[in-house]
Length: 532
Image 1: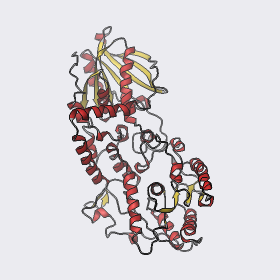
Image 2 (image 1 turned 180 degrees about the vertical axis):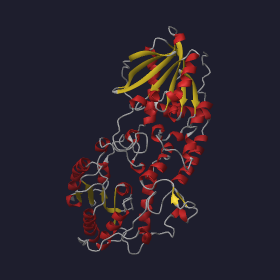
Image 3 (image 1 turned 60 degrees about the vertical axis):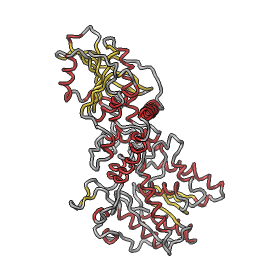
Image 4 (image 1 turned 90 degrees about the vertical axis):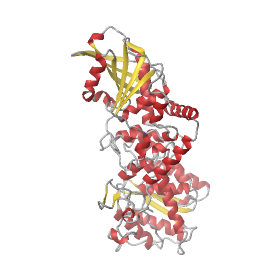
């Protein structure tokens, strides 16, 4: 089992298990207990909030490498079992695992990955993907397994990996992990134990509780593991089971691995090594082969799962504002998904076909004022400017589904980005597609010269315009202002700004290319660019 943010809960769980006659290893995962990755010795504190926030802070940098933070969680847990197997008091054939929330995730990962697990009691995690999509929450980085839904994987498969071994599903009725998903998964899975004639080996226990490992769950876990691993059912008493002072349980003198072990490695250090390995593999290819592989991979990511539909462009209104004419438009980029724009022209060029610059920036049409000078100057030179709202941005920002600000970790954009990653997609790839659909929509603007299209890519969401230029030759030039520079620089930064970072991630991109490659390959300034 692992420690969690509810440290006292886990101490109590451990005591119940010990009183049932079991040997217990309580293991800190990354970002919790004594393993805070961003603990700074000179400050005597951590600079990134421990637990779920650290999981996402470090875990987000895994995505461009094609990795998940889960790889480190499951590796650590398996190494914990390796250690247990060296202990003289441990029977390697009778190893159980339990934990709740992130610990339930690690329990599930071990159920899948390590055949040495003889019995398991995942708590407050087992559900199903469909139920969680409607629950409104994002998930910690170690709980996001990119592409697994696309491969047909769901939580039933976690349980089935153990059949017919003993499994106890522990659930809280009022959890943010939907109890209806837990019940459905359990009912769909239990029949497989019956096929083995071992229906007594799978059980579910629900407590009247919110998200936590309750004492009632701890007692059930103690009864379960003692029965299946020791051969008798122990029922520990509640008497004198109380949490200890955390410092009494420290394995280090300082209470932090980074506080005293100079060469200790954390996820950030592993990412640096992974980045170096990926770059070596990528750079070993001939330039033309690299370029072709990059285009093919990006095309697959951007066009996969997109259902073509009629644009059905609507021009909502056209108004005069001082020297500028402003037209509001919208269209269907995919079936059921709208994009919108505001298109500006200087009044002196009305009645003429104009070249166009599509502006792609954070906040889209809701962030006109910071860019007003650039819009007016560009239009004064005889170009139209289309300010684009891609899916979920600008005026198309979805309603919040939880208590978090929309663009911060765990907000609605993070949640929707997670859901797309589960189906082997990404919000960034979807928005690149949106930029290309905006080019199609230009066919319905009779004053636009479609032979002279530029992209103005400003800020970190400007990356959608840069990537669209790789796949669409209609884009003649891309001007990048205050962009992210490179994904490598982000992954290699120990500290970075996490605001809205999930909106720019296409998992695995660095295996094929980085943004500086696009300019070198000529995608951002094509030779056939028409001046004007």
